[in-house]
Image 1 (cartoon, rainbow, N blue to C red):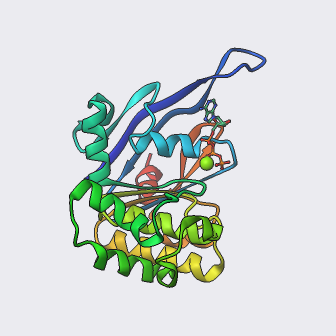
Image 2 (tube, rainbow, N blue to C red):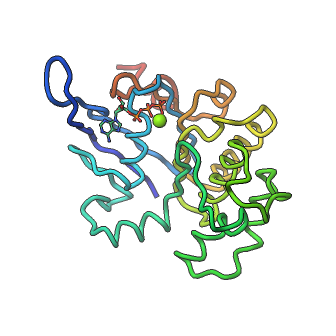
Length: 235
Ligand SMILES: Nc1ncnc2c1ncn2[C@@H]1O[C@H](COP(=O)(O)OP(=O)(O)OP(=O)(O)O)[C@@H](O)[C@H]1O
Ligand SMILES: [Mg+2]
């Protein structure tokens, strides 16, 4: 499946000197392909999370469209959209998340139990916990976890449904070198299995994994490297 943003913009009402609104994202074009890792870099406040949320089906663009293959995401009803999203798109949100009334293991299993009615997903969950080095704390509660442990929990949870597309917002944000390497290795592994991966990152070490790198600057997205660049050279 290909997730494609066609000229998407997000307009927010906020007073600036010139007007009462501004564009957090301006006419972004992006296509996420199976088996490819795409990275977005850019300064704080440049619009990266806003773009990711629009791609995830979580935030409707003010202009433009997001397609999953031929399906216009925001033409669906809320119910249809959340069903499609939960089956096909895994999101690792920025910041720290985790349902407090569930253990680490239950948090990881939850999406698969809810959306796929798959009571037998604990093996997959344990594998992810092991890869994210949080197996030892499977029975702990999210409030007992460090920032980096919560981050790795969110990554395991995004992957439990084996989505076609993973959208990860600074997935290595709070992590040390060893855990950063583990996370990047897991992203590479799922890309090799055919998942389309998008990562917002400040991690210089992540660049070597990327097939395409984009920069977000004041809401404008531009490609800085990648295969598509080769086509541009002849122009
Ligand atoms: N709901 C909202 N209403 C108004 N402005 C918003 C809203 N959400 C985000 N913004 C603004 O849009 C801009 C882009 O925000 P966004 O969160 O996408 O940036 P970012 O690139 O992800 O930054 P960071 O690296 O700090 O996470 C910022 O100026 C932010 O203040
Ligand atoms: Mg952000």
